[in-house]
Amino acid sequence: MEIKISPEAASWYKRELSLKAGDTIRLFPRYSSGGGLHPGFSLGIAGDRPVTAGAQTEQEGVLFFMEEQDLWYMDGHNLTITYSDAEDDIEYGYERPQEADSVKK
Image (cartoon, rainbow, N blue to C red; front, side, top):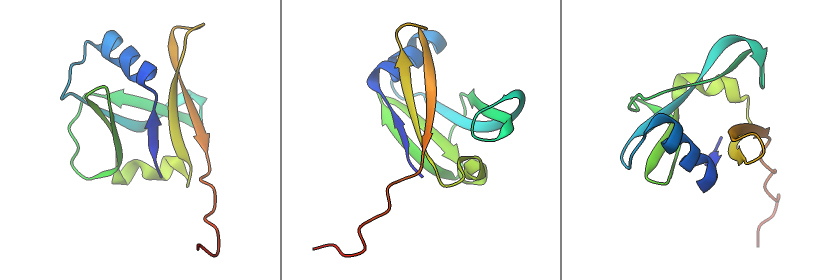
């Protein structure tokens, strides 16, 4: 499972949450009336430091991560976070990683 975040999305987080280089954002599943990958759950965010990060990436000097115990939410998918200029908001995308070629040369 990978987390990918566009520079524009990272800049949005920095602007909206007054983040600076060296800050961290934890992504975690939370119960909600909406739904992303799982009905009744969506991704929440918190300014926590990693304890046992299961996936992480850095963009614009900010570390974005999910704790190991929260990876169930991703159900084998990669997470892509992009910025929508039209909405001035971020969008979460989920996709299964491409299967590796059975024979690599």
